[in-house]
Image (cartoon, rainbow, N blue to C red; front, side):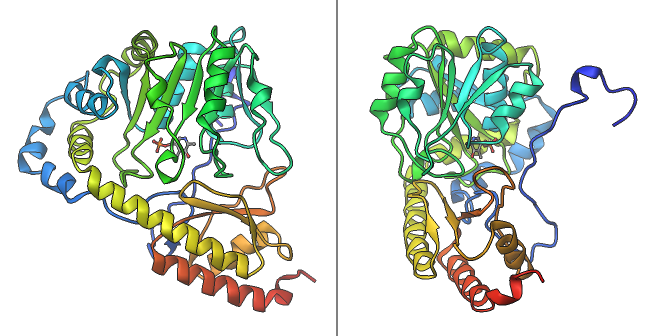
Length: 360
Ligand SMILES: *Cc1c(COP(=O)(O)O)cnc(C)c1O
């Protein structure tokens, strides 16, 4: 920290993204990316013409992509906001709708960026404990009269809420925003996008980083009532009006025109998840009922940190959160079937030699 940093940010603890090591020898199961490339249509769209036009700013309204995304869900383009990854969309939403009078509530175990945005924007946040088994008690949010941030499915637990519960949160908090972060919805959750026309306090956030194989392109969406979308857009125009670059706009349009490809990839990932879950259970692992592209697992005999290190030594990266309640768990991204077989073989070896793991 330099001596020039303002007092305001001296105590800030930033979000720590998962490792992205440069020596690509690891099997990367640590940041919930897709193991598959984007649709071939994306490569076609990023042609010489597209690159030659990089001298020009992108369309600041992203009109074509918003139109396409809106049509997909039976919405209007003014129900759609485009972001440089959904993290940026979340930041703008916290900025626009939360302050010390309009506080944010979210679960105690959830996506690590929410508390960071609260700290950055000086928003008091209330973290409501999940039950012992990590399920979310929806009643805790009914009539709470604060802005609600709900990832559905939740991360890193993978547990999904029924849409009816989201709807009750919307109905009992009419004076506040309910933001549903659906980063993992394509792997088994049910989307609240269809409710946008009925609730003026609903925001639904989607990302292209997980089920659409474009984490590297940085593209996120927010769906909501036109007035809410205008508010978020005001944040964007006050911060970075060209937030989504030209190549990403084109890639996004191409991706949206190949629904069949993504459906296929999503089905492959769900099948690999369920097969890996069985394999891990056979090795004695306990886990949540994940509806996401990751498994949240724990072994009764080995601490999460030790298991993380042992896997790393075998060239497999997974995510370990050294945080209360979940430090015994690992979050393992679902990769290809081959990667999952390698993971399970590595875990079997580690477990067979588990006595060596105990520190003397
Ligand atoms: C991955 C993730 C995001 C961020 O996605 P980007 O679009 O890559 O910024 C947001 N929310 C949750 C719950 C996530 O897991």
